[in-house]
Length: 268
Image (cartoon, rainbow, N blue to C red; front, side, top):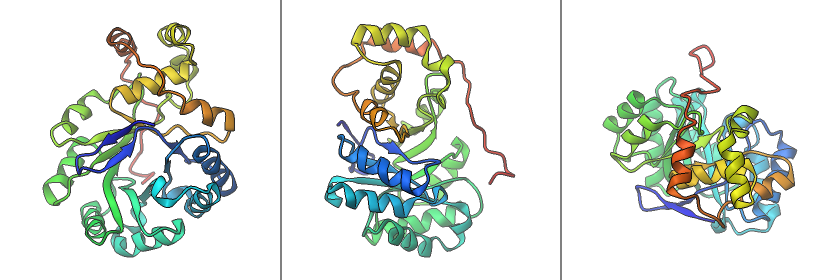
């Protein structure tokens, strides 16, 4: 596993398993499978309704808490009382601390909620902070109003939508992207682009593994989700080869500036 040093000095795994849309039993089983196959990071959220299952999975895996990185998110409905919500999140995960805590969406008093997360850092309840699905302007608003800069920004990112402009802005204070939909929501048009097929043959990997390797070499953290033990194992098998600069340039050529999901105000 490769770790990335965050802007606060903490390290965080470059790849983990996402639990979006997983029912509790499925999430627990996926966490156990992932941790027993070399993963060290799990991503969940209040809104996924599986935090308790993630906590159970960590314990069932037999791994020590210090060997596992847990990432979760506060939903906007709890921003008004975020201090309490953080304690409740800790209780659901059955842990004393959260490695990376995000605000899930830019709705409500997100600046006030971020300040509550800062208090949690100072209290030792949270190690690193992040923002999920925030625009550049919204990130700037938070950065300008608070003390602790976000270390990770979670957004949709993949070869069709590499978030180049966002990355340029994040470089100004050392934040990194955590990519959801890292494989383009499983879009076969993306996964089966000829460049990935050619590189898969070159390195003896799958197209998906080539894309995930592109992410980590681009500086992204990836959280592909799967309930299939074989897919879980394959998704982490990306650290025994390296794409060349020429390979990376070829992949950059498939950028279509296309995203698969756009949240609406009504959805928030």
